[in-house]
Amino acid sequence: MQFLSKIKALGACISFSLLGASLACSLDKGGTASSPTDARVEDGEVEVDTAGEVSTDTQPADVPVTECGDGVKNGAETDVDCGGGVCGACGGGRACVEARDCISRQCAMGRCVDSCADGTRNNDETDVDCGGSCDACADGRKCGKPADCASGTCSGGICGVSKCDDGVKNGDETDVDCGGTVCPRCALGKGCSGAASCVTSFCAAGVCARPPSCSALHAAAPGLTSGIYKIDPDGAGAGTELDVYCDMVTAGGGWTFLAHVNQDYVGGTLFGVDTGTYRADRADDATTYGRAASLLPNLMHTEMMVTIDMVEPAAAVAASRLVIFQYKAGLKAFNGGPVPCSGLDETFQYRLSPTDPLKAARMFICDATRWQARVDDGSLSLVLFSGGSALGQYWGAGIGGDNSWNHDAWWYVR
Image (cartoon, rainbow, N blue to C red; front, side, top):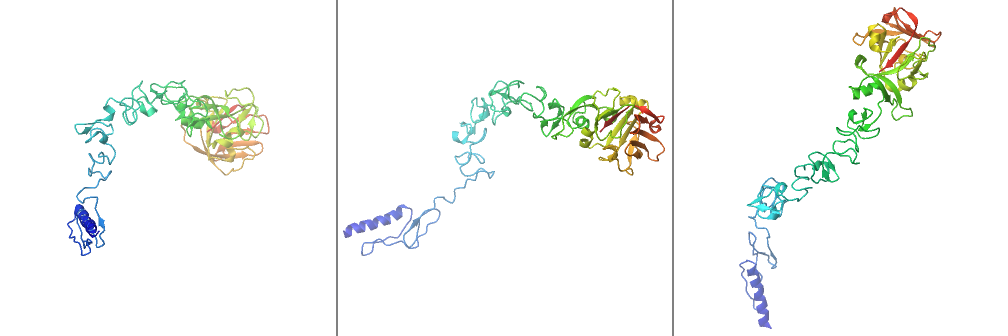
């Protein structure tokens, strides 16, 4: 038994030696191997403490550490920050050792083969060597989304020219089968990228909508001609959409036709109520009609234009029968009534043609029955209507008139 014990003790010493340590090991009289004392081994060799415990350094000090993303080729990388089975695979043209180093899984002559030119549909390609992270595919090739196609159109999984009846939003369509440069304009509520996308010629917050006024419509689509358009003055409010005449030419355009004053008009509420049956064709049907209540509270207007006896502003300018008032938004004299019409001390301006300079004006009379605007010194009347008699519109000397009653007038607002 003592002999066997000595053999076991000697085996322990041999085990230390196999680990790479040169240890002084002896058997005591009892046949027990003495423990090595303070044996320390540098550079990955065995380190033994007085209790006989062993530790090893598994990373030799002279092996560089791989750091993927540090912009340096190091460690096991085959190229900068790629390959080697540690970092991600390398792209085409970068150094490799074996197939796994490459995105294309092809390593030829120490370089990765470009996966977008290898004649094989692989990785995220939607067709051979195109789509996904490769170049966009030509028409007729397979696709998964518009970006996979050079045409920007992926319909039914195939690149091609978009169709306006395929039930898919593709190409440059702004909504399904409408908008863009190929398909028809989109209806109300459909997606849009601008006025040209919509049948209404008005796009608000990416959705086709009705313009609130002729001025808003003109700003969105300045190429529109004068004519009848549908507007929605209160937007999402309870009011209905209205057909109105829009003058898109005079003094920069964007005028909404407000009212026709007949030559026998009696009343003082032209700016406060909807009067008669509004006609978007502006016809002189021997009645007074207007949409002041439907329009004025919603437009935040700052200008009114009046033509005397002539429906077309251009003709009225030539005959000295036009005046344009300019005022601050909300001025009561141009928003309610005349009754109640306060603010006689609030001035405004006027001009007699689109190119004339603005001049000062003020309300001369504004009470329960009359609305009269005069030049600032009060010496000349511009226009006047009265609720006291069937006198219609007044043509004042201030706009080239003869201070006479019983004229027709057309009022526009902007």
